[in-house]
Amino acid sequence: MHSVDASSLTRKSFRVGPSLLGTFLTFAFLLAVGYPSSAAPLSAIKVHALPAFARKYGLPCSSCHLAWPMLSPFGQAFKDNGYQLGNDRDAPIYQSPAYWPVTFRITPIWHRENETNAGVDSATAPGGQTEASLTTHGFDWSGLDFHTGGTLAKNVSFYVLPSSDNTGAFHFETVMARLDNLAGTTWLNVKLGKFELDNLLSEKRILTLTNVAGVYTNYHYQPLTEVASPGAIPFVFGIGDNQDGLEVMGHSKDDRTRYSVALLSSNDGTPGLPTCRCYATFLTASQAFQVGSLGLQRIGAFDYIGEWPTYYQFTQGGNGVAGTGIGNKSYYRAGLIGQFFIKKYDLTAMYFHSSDNAYLGTGTPANQPLPVGAQKPVWNGGLFESHYTFSPQFILIQRVELVRMSQQAFQIGGGPVYVPGSDEVPSASFGNENVYAIAGRYYPFISSRAGFAFHGEYAFSHQSGASPVTGRNLDFSSLLAGFDFAF
Image (spheres, helix red, strand yellow):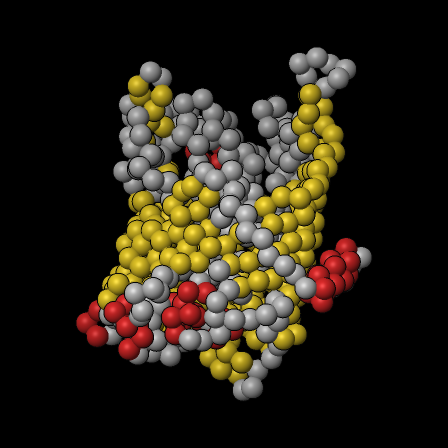
């Protein structure tokens, strides 16, 4: 998952010719004055894209990508088939001993961040807090993604992604092996390890990079009341996060019909079994169909059903013993998705319906009574992301995400705001969120050796009643321009 606040890397010098530099400066200027392009987040994203696959098969990157790193239908089918084309080149023994299926990705950038109503120390009330508008800007770089993947033998594939933040602190974003085409059928493939869920709209191949839009808000949204009280285990979950588990997936030979069933540890992809002895299940299925000359359309549905511990059975020195979480409470994330193509224009629309148990929704351990009036929070969400591909070298991106609470964890009050920890009760709109992004990517060249893009983006987020001191609305904005490259 590629992220702009991620990693240090030994610098390599490279030269950009006057024409490329001029193109980039022109593009950055148009973006700044409001050219209709589209934007996205920097800090929480890891993106899968391997020029190594293009080198292996002698194909251009555009064979698998509508716009790198976003997959085309052909690229999705290649991934579903275990990174195989079904020819002699699939086998590692076919390759020269010098071939190494590795890709490095990093993004040097300039960006500007603004947060309204941020909590800061008060100059007039020592020990107290007030709110202020915070703005930072300057040159920076993302983390480093170190991708390697492919086949170990016919119908045995793998993917490993060590990833760092921009200080060089590494972790494993993806570690998985897959047995492909078991029993000679594409309907049975088994994957084991840490991997991205089979989301049709992949957060790991997201086209936006800003701190606001670098993740899909609906994939990670949790109500603002979910703050762990003393003795409770914090509930942290995102359907866009890579998870630890076992997946069985299958697809038709033309990849138009797909399904996936995954059994996952309830730890949000964290290593070492830190939470509980409990599991979750992710189910998804989709169907694609051709509509004349417009292109391939797809509709699908998904459901994530899980449970999370609320307190530790044992402690050592006052700290919970890893893996002994109990008092499990349920949660789910369900939705529908449609992906529609009209020649150079495409639109992805998603509907989300989600709920958490009242104990999770109020951050209460299950060995303690619920707060008076507590109930399970319920919310709905919508996502609309569109792309206009002028050519394989230039794409515009637009996204709108909406989150609307339909039932608060506490009874609704008459006030306009809710301050966590106070005696007030939340308004109906508490925690509602809107996210808008526009961005553009220009690829000056397309080859089987490397990927390079000029990236420009603006994103804005508005959340009702979320400021930490007064409970006013909280806004974030992010502007970014940079070079996104992989080799």
